[in-house]
Image 1 (spheres, rainbow, N blue to C red):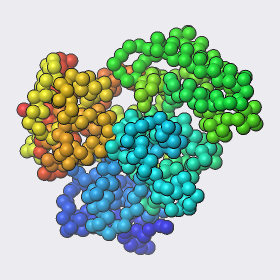
Image 2 (cartoon, helix red, strand yellow):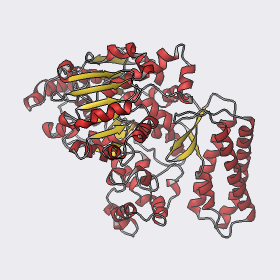
Image 3 (cartoon, rainbow, N blue to C red):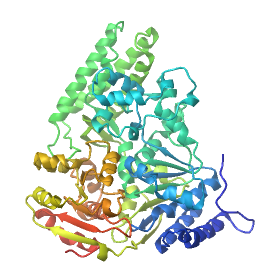
Length: 632
């Protein structure tokens, strides 16, 4: 049911004129009268978003920390959602930031209470953030630790009964299990080979219930950028198969920490072939009664797949990067083409098996869907094309990743060609107020933009220290941590963080929380409450919001240059000056984001420590002038 606008419409004024008047009344008078600070930068941003709604174009809204960006986009977004009858979509950088946006005492709750808006806000989390009943049932047969019992207890009784679906509340979200670590969660969550459309439990699945819940939102749907990109990547195929898209039609999109959209798109618009997934999938189909020719075809595919991955490992260019370059040998390409033939033969055998009903229908349908994707990936990999491919580790498994098209082309086709207001919101979208890097990275030609500074007096509340020519950065960190300050240590990569972890004495290691040890938002809550004093992360360069004494020191362990991997090599190949056009702007944007974690409110204070080795000292002049304060 459509909600009423928070202001009156009249025949004398358009919706946009009335919206502009209401924004002024709220930000100049009503909210300051109720205790919120009047911020000129926030008011300017809100008015710019009102213009974008009218023009239905793209806006790069760069506003410094403390501007009040969230309230600036929430006011026009909620109004526009109610005017159009379609919810506004807010896409955050990751799942952790979704929880922060809707936390108790946050901006949404604050606006709701101060303006009596009765905001309808619902969360749409990525599919891997939900429990898969099929995978959970399989894990119950093998797992013996307490975490599997904790999940079992949480599943509503009616899920396995015959009671009404209306009586089942949404359940099974990752955030419901804060004590389950990432490794365990990956044994029971949804993954890409599960075929929900043919699952006999789909109507009682927590993911399905959550999806029905957020579809009914009248004001706001909040999701991750990963999920938005997955929605865009699968929308056409889901509609062809008679399924609803992952997200409903929306009135506008706000990309919070929007500079990260490119990386979410890269994850969604790729094919993935894992080393063990197909082997395990086919083993489940080798049941009694299956025809001998089908068994032979499955075994042949398994054997050739293993030969392919053995050769793939030999063809990898050794590096410390997560994405590893592949030198495609003739042998590897020959194995790849053989796999295509193997899949086609097996799919023919499955036609006969479907008439015999020896293999459960769900398992057979899931295998057919998976093999069609597998064959498509192999055809791209073995063809002479502009596709980009690499080997990485995903969920603890070797994974061949294939990106068939440049992301700029895909985003132009599926997102930016639509007449839809899209707002990129972040404290760091430009390099010295130039938006060329982010616009070209996303393939955006026409856009509006603005940049307003933070209202905070950084010279009064922040100190920046450079530790130059450091041979052993770990020793510097150990010495700094002796005072027990609330500290966030940021690393450019997972590899860098794990290398630091290994260098620490055991007792020091046990006193520090490392990303991946448990669910990340749970780690942040423990850090905020004071249970732990130090968090190490390679993801929290943006979005983390811990005011006052909750965080008083940020250590930048290494300058966040992009990796030397196939993906960034492709970007470098399209540039005239790779360092100036790719590496340096990427690093400067990420460095500004990391420094921005420290000062979040007018009551915050603290220090930044930049640890530089000899190579990083050599580029010091490139980043000194973007630091918010002079170096101590």
